[in-house]
Amino acid sequence: PGGRGARRPPPPPMGAVTIELPAGLVDPGESPEAAALRELKEETGYTGSSACVSGQLAMSPGLTDEAVALVVVEVDLDSPANRMPEQALDESEFIRVNRVPVKALLPTLRELERDGCVPFTGLYTLAVGLQLGASGLADASAALST
Image (cartoon, rainbow, N blue to C red; front, side):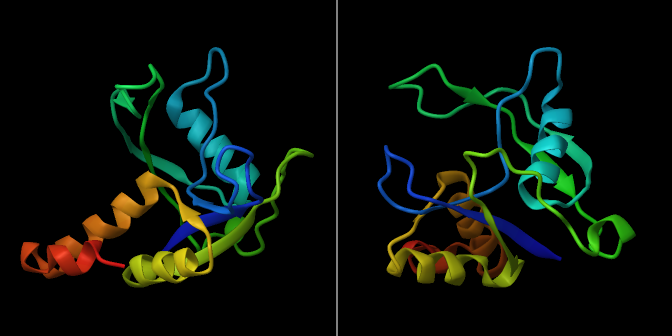
């Protein structure tokens, strides 16, 4: 299984290319799971199924009331629907899909940082958590150093 990341052109607030997971707004009447599957299909071309969903999560509670839900999605890369994925991007979107093996996620993000890209906090946190899970807390400083 591989991780998914998408490169976008520099958004005005960041001024740099960002490395993100598929994400988007939940439309009125839509569940977080349905929104996640829709965004996955639109941004990457892949289809999947919702494995689980979190409750409401605060993004930056000291600055904003923005909240998100985390939806874990399973993608079967052997499914015929995922053999030749086609994105369905909005006119304002530019997203390049990068499939990265899970074990290579943190080193890949660090390499992209050296190239001037800025990873999304959630993706970087996932990568560090995977590294810590594999190596234990003894390697915490190595997981966080760039």
